[in-house]
Amino acid sequence: MGARNTRTSQSPLHSEIETLILEMNCIRNLRQFNVTFATDCSQLVKMVSEPEEWSAFEIYFEDIKILKRSFNSSDLIHIPQTQNTMADSLAHSARKQPSYVIHMDAELPVWFAEST
Image (cartoon, rainbow, N blue to C red; front, side, top):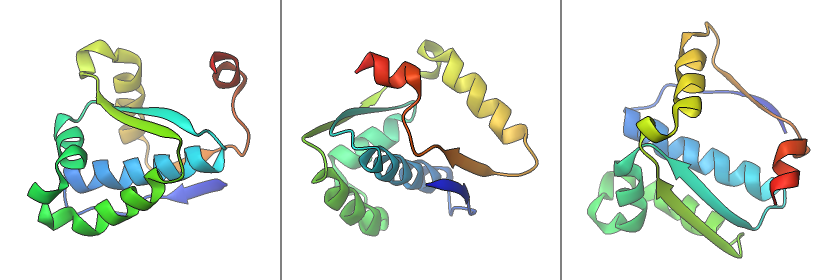
C-alpha cells in the first residue's frame, strides 16, 4: 500500500466520510472480511445508516455501498471521544504534524493478527 497524502476536504464531515472509505479500502486489501469500524463522529454513523437524508454526500455512499459488498459483515459504530482517549490523543498528535501523510503497512501488525 504505502503512503498517501491527504487533500483538503470541503468540511470536517467530508473528511470523516473520506477517511471511512480509505479505511474500508485498506481493511479490504488486508483481507479482513468481518469488521467493525468505529468513529467518534455520531453524524457519520447517522449518515451511513440514513443516506437518503444526506444528498450532498451521495457520491460517497455509492463507494461505501460497493466496498461493503467486499465484507462478509461490517458495522459502523459510534464511540465517544471520552471513551477512546488513546485514539483521540493520536488524532491530536497527527494534526500537529507539519505534513499530513497516512502510512499503512501491507501486513497486519502482530497485535491485530493476535486479536482476530
